[in-house]
Length: 129
Length: 170
Length: 68
Figure: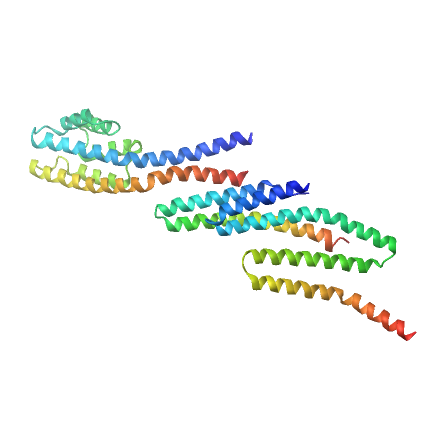
């Protein structure tokens, strides 16, 4: 799928949403969600390639596989939180969107704890030698 | 292939809507004809003192289908009567009911009128005809009101429902 | 790999039809049926949306998290 098609799709979707907004705001909003999902699923099929590249580079550089998994999971959580927050924000519910974002950040932090621990341990080992 | 199905679906639902609204537009016309028939009957009975079969034939000659058929049948059945007038009136009404565009209220009024027909003297009969005419007048007003409000709605509703189903099935 | 684009037009079409039904029914003084039509349209569209959300989440899962 090339860029022109994606832009064309986005423009058509926005015209349809404008058409519906006055009479059926709820259905217009659902249309927005579907458009977002459609664009994201295109995006996901591309990001798959990139993640495969990261894994390949990690293997070549000899990085521990569990660290790579954590990084990829963090990226995934960031995207999901972003998707959720923007959809809720489009509906005009700012406070819920903010909570979704905060929860996303906290979950990322939670995932990073083991890496952080190993980092601290490495530093302590480094000094205790 | 999909295209043909879509056209068939939309045609079918549009036709349903048009048919329904046609029935609605037909009702005031038929009530008017019925009133006309009663006025003829009034004239025949009060001034010409003709019998009911003859009156019915006279009416059936002057009004249009499908109501004229009803009066013709009643007249024919009454020429060599085997059953009571009310029974004949009712049976014929039931038989032809599906070809009329009237609703059950109208049927009730007609049945009530049939019950009174031929049981009283001329003066009483005149009163019954007047009563039935005033009932029909009320029904006519209601039918006209309904037609103005809903006839167009059913037409567009049929078409829109077809498009809606089409979008769901696509 | 991609969702079919026609779903966008389908939803927009349902929205337009429901809006027209709503307008006509309201004009004819059948408020309650108008509300009902809107609700039905909304539910049908919602089913579409929920299906595609599920599909997207499955995709995200396979890309990011549980890739084994």
